[in-house]
Image (cartoon, rainbow, N blue to C red; front, side, top):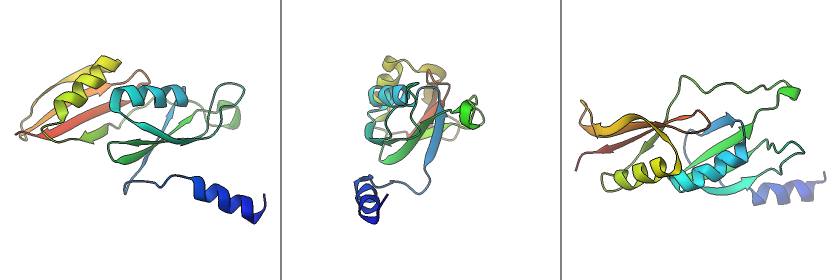
Length: 143
């Protein structure tokens, strides 16, 4: 690849938003991206083309003002699928928005793990799990 091509490719990449960006490995990264569009209003900003097995090594989403990166597992290259564990994706929301976000996510097919409720720390909080095994939480101050 020559310098002109490298420069052109660098310029077409969307800017990364957020000071810490999650990069999730899932089974079906493009399907997950499309699901996150429906469930969370995410937008697909960039992605690498799918291979002959329907996998992609990179999808860049914007979701709730931040970047979220997704990629498929590639066990044939030493990167097997690992079950998501020991983390939760947190969506901090306004008190006016949380009910809309919660309903949209549940209607899209996320499983309720913890009902949306006022918690002991004073905020409304609930937890969900998506069809890809990823845990999501929503938190908003009480009005």
